[in-house]
Image (cartoon, rainbow, N blue to C red):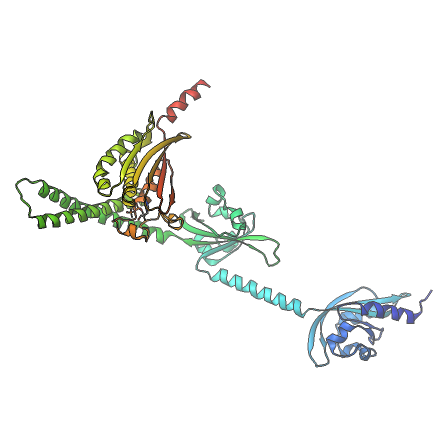
Length: 486
Ligand code: ADP
């Protein structure tokens, strides 16, 4: 049974009125029969005025598909069109047109529209941002690879191509382990990246031709433009030149310090001869000058020795030969060397060995260097009436040595830089003492090279405790019989 056309029109008008987006109903001849508030707002004409208009008055170029749809009398068509407003502005809209079919015949067409200006604006901005990102990646002076979370390359730039020897096409789709195997052994810390921390590390790149190159990689995690998928951006800088320069610099420092050591020790020997020669009666003024000269020469010798040790460690020349050592013997020897200085500063030296003491595995001269540095700092940065105490503990197969002073202390901020080369506190009490800022750097290196760790706790105005660990000498021997008995 056919429906009353008037009630049907009412029904359609009612439902399109409710829509938040522009909508029209036309008859088979494309004459507007109904429209809604959103359409009237968009076009600038009252909705009643629009009724009776041919649709092409607002759709200046109706798409062919719409007329076809009408004649075919079936299916919905989606299309984009520029709609003409009262002020003759053309507004890009997207429409879905669908025929109303009754008894097999199309009786009306419903057009449901959407203002896509905002969407196309956003899409335009996204495209711009994407192009900008691509251009930054492509023009970066560093090699850049973007990978998915399975560490497969999804984008790479020219410099990455030059650094790895693989063409961009060969990189894309392949795991990063193809050109830096370090990632397989020691994958980048994704959790740290997710916490928003940039992570960097030195890796060895394995080029396509089999050669290797040192590189610094900086990682960052980002989300794609929809905020759905994570990606890792990694930027590589070639360290070949820097490493070469470092080597040259080390070589230079080593040679210069080595050459300086001879004249400096010659001056030391000559001065000692002058002071010890009973035939000479030194004028007190000259003696005073010579003592100052001796002091300066000692400082110079410390600096030269520190520089030699640093360049040895950085160029891999540092030789460490460990054997069982009674650490207390070294401490006693250093205490007796340092007692005169400690006395002048009114600093007491205290030694509390364990009973029985256990030997450690260490290089004797390096162990002496470690203790001398830490005890001398304890004395240098102390206060009159203070003390430096050396005591021990045994923990997990290691001998733990504490060197505690009651001196000026080190602020928390300064503690962060304590083990950096050439770093010295700005504190006046520190600057009043001579020093190179190399001692702790060397101590840390030596302790670690002998299998231990160096740590510090300190409170400003209260004092500082340096703690280092070294492996006990007997640990290995003790373990062996256990293994055999199994
Ligand atoms: P140097 O003593 O020659 O300056 P170090 O590398 O031994 O060099 O020490 C670096 C810096 O660390 C010192 O200049 C000083 O600021 C601080 N420091 C080291 N030991 C102590 C200590 N026991 N008490 C307070 N500050 C210290």
